[in-house]
Image (cartoon, rainbow, N blue to C red; front, side, top):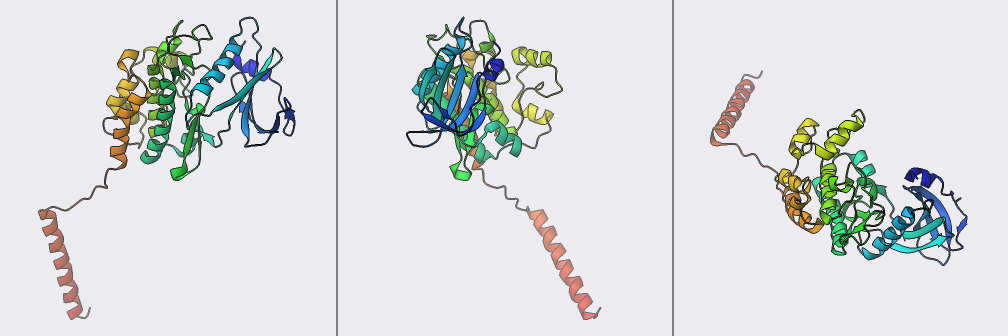
Length: 337
């Protein structure tokens, strides 16, 4: 069944009501691909958490159930301050499942960038460091996210207290293929590595590196990388670009988009390796990609302001002008004009 249709079949819970005799519904957060998310308060006490309800409406093949179980397992294995922690889970009969996660307040990275445009270099560096750290933890735990996109990154706070959380490990996958019998999710096409669209995709950390490269361009420029990602472009042209199109240097895309954004020196080469159509030629994982990117961002963020000092000729001209101005002033004053 179509995921959004599955989500529409999940019953909506009213604020103030009680769920499973364990949680009080505070408010509705939004709709995911196969369910609804609420902010709830445990009746036993404690901070509010996020409650995700999933309708298991594919009993014939059990794909939704396996995806749900995978999200729970992955969420518990990836322990990072930049990943929304999975806390508990359960089932209600044969048709409904639920899980609770750390509640991540704030806005999505997509909302933040669309509201502000290209982020400052220092802010970009701070947020990207947290995204890459979260994925490095997942990769170290043997897990590939496979659905990295701005909508799955939540940002809260301000200034030095800005914090990011990675959400939705629903289509995450083990490196070793132990979950290869489950639903082959390819993530969101605009952000997913091309190899994930194959009939039997072999998920590797390099698939997340592709998404991280595109996310980095989005944060630094405020725009999507792909030429046919605009509303007026045809789906056929976009699909062809995603699968076979030229991976143009980011600096060229910035000029084509007529953006004022200034990319760090060396970014074209970094991006070319992160977003390479051949997985073996990309950075191996998030940690390796960040080790190459961080110096580029740091060097640009710490670059001293340019100070223009006049040369000898310009200095002489300026002094001559000042002297002439003073001579004229005293002449006019002596003539009492």
